[in-house]
Length: 161
Image 1: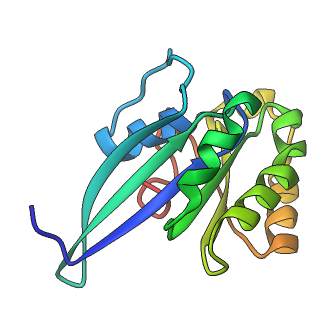
Image 2: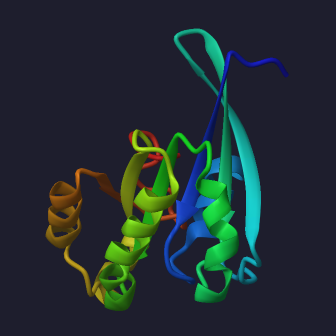
Image 3: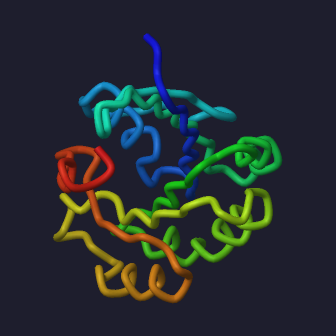
């Protein structure tokens, strides 16, 4: 299918925060509760229409393990944007955001848009990171922010789905 524009996005963050689930929800509109660890990088694509123009979005889902960090750095090249994901039920994933953000800014072009995503908002009873903390981190670092759930696709129409 022909398209007017192609945009590449990369999904980054610690292992287990739901990066692959977000990709699957965005590309296939489905949730898979059990997911193998991503080895290196996985890829998905979706066509959208804006102002009557077909736009192809390429989404690169990176491995969150430290051992794959050097491999995934090469995928920042040419990316229009990055989704920096943490798990609202795991404080450690939020604490690692600064490292991920520094990595993204060091290996991408200066005008790449970065969106901070607090995932697993469907698990409110297990929350360890307040929404206000995510908002404050985003504000401090000039990021777009939203909380979502790959499981329920909440914030889907207004957000990343």
